[in-house]
Image 1 (cartoon, helix red, strand yellow):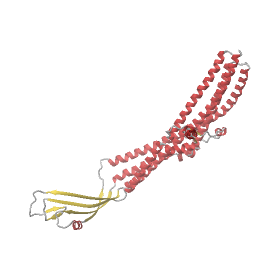
Image 2 (cartoon, one colour):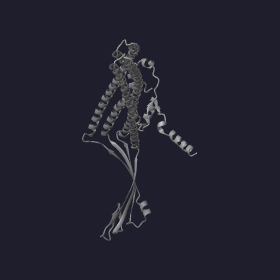
Image 3 (tube, one colour):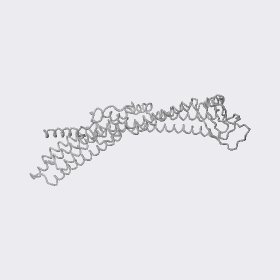
Image 4 (cartoon, one colour):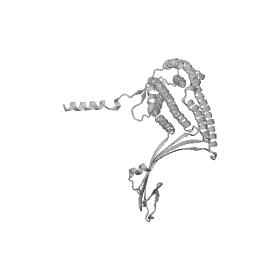
Amino acid sequence: MRKLFISCIVGLALLTIPGNAEARKWTLAECIDYALTNNITLRKTKLNKLSAQEDVLQSKAALLPSLSASTSHNATYRPWPETGSATVANGYVQASVDKVYYNGSYGINSNWTVWNGNRNRNTVKLNQMAERQAELDSATTANNIQEQIAQLYVQILYSAEAIKVTKGSLETSKANEERGIEFVNVGKMSKADLAQLTSQRAQDEYNIVEAESNLRNYKRQLKQLLQIVDDEEFDIVIPTTTDEMALQEVPTLQSVYSSALATRPEIKNALLGIETSKLNMQIAKAQKLPTVGFNASAITNTTSMNNNSWGPQLKNNFNLGAGFNVSIPLFDNRQTKTAVNKAIIQKQNYELELQDKQTTLYSTLENYWLQAITNQNKFKAAKVATESAQTSFELLNAKFEQKLINIVELMKGRDALLQAQQNELQSKYLTILNIHMLDFYKNGKLK
């Protein structure tokens, strides 16, 4: 019974070992969704947007009157007061003169800037634009992250397929080495030729190790974008890729560029920058205009040199006041002119930034378009080359078994086949990637 109990405990322990669990496989959509939620760089841009929202709320609140309460309390010691005379405390004549006395005041004050050349209202608009710019910065960062994820994802797909090709080549190398051993044993092949076959098999094994290392590195980079820091096995779903996906029509460069100009957040941000510079010019010019404000107050005070109690003193000394003020700038040491000129320079800078972003966008799209066209043509040629190399290698392999060709010719044929297969895979995945990137810039969605 005791042995049975121990066996059950051991069995349960083995079932709960994390290493026995199958590694989660991530789809492209899952990678993107996870990164958009957890990527630290993106989360920082979202915090910038929240900060900009606070600036908007503060500038809106600045349109309202301010209200503040104040009170002060003072004790005074006068060691040698003049007897038989009166004193003034808080604007009131006090007949009682004490060596030690107390004064207190209580007040509520309000100020309201009624008009200042619309600087306050334009500041609200400016902060609203800044909030929108922070939102567009976040969208730009999100697009960049999605683009990087897609590139790494496709690179992982290509690397995984390339490993399969290399492993297939390794199986062929092993078979050739085994046949070579048999030929050496019966005296049909020299040991030098066998050594070349062994060297080829070892080189294929080395290539597999190197390819698997590259694959792990691409997965590491993808995990970094997703902000995954655990040591669990990370893998992706291998979607079905067809030749038709690589042979589909490539969208025209101009159509993609026109759509991207209307939708890309970095372009919208640059356009919004020009609008903010215009507002800054209006705010700067408003410094030449008068400022009109209102103020109001309610004040009362108390003193110990009064025979009345605290309550009646507060009532008797209560004052209400109101007024307005007008400030007209006459000479401001060139501050207004400098602010206006700086706003003009800022506008010119934003216009240049817009041109730069438009040029960068076009260059990026042109690169994707050229890569799509070039690799699509390479893929068409590579398919023919692979079929030809496969047929050639099969014929060479048959001749090698009949000792009609030497080992060098066989290895050349095998290398040609491997290179053709790698070229086909690479051009296929690069074509698919670049077409999808063009669609992403055109439609804003990454499939």
